[in-house]
Image 1 (cartoon, rainbow, N blue to C red):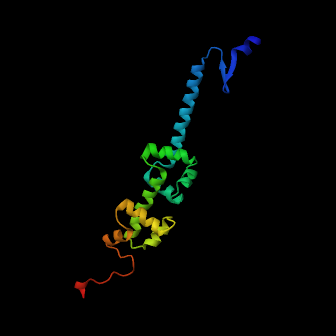
Image 2: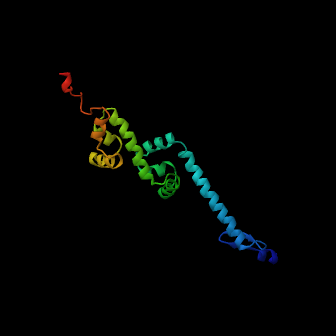
Image 3: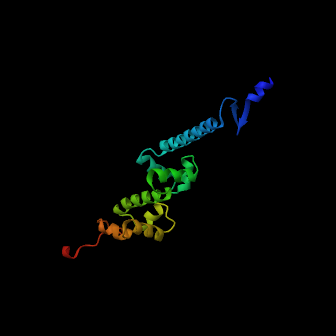
Length: 162
């Protein structure tokens, strides 16, 4: 009985037989950790597999990175690592790009700048205008006018039509 007890020991919660080396145990633990990370990423891949699913989750998360992490059932830091590896940007940068891209469709549809800003969860219209200008190089109003929409009611008649 004493011989059996001496041949078994524990290393960091893992049962080790006398014939096993510490290096083999560490390698096994490392493999299980790596598999755990792969499984975590596969869990993320299920949530973020297609572009349509990502955009849908972005809307549900109200374009907030922390809420997106909560919906994916992972920590914000895990989400950040995943986005850096997969897209080369932070989750919030990606979310901002998505909501600005969707905002352009609303502006083309003739919506007011303020309406679009609040619809896409910008705290203040000036914040929306600043982000829009950084991304597209013009204000939302100029963008709407350039794309043939008049966001303030009826289009005024042209001088040649009078």
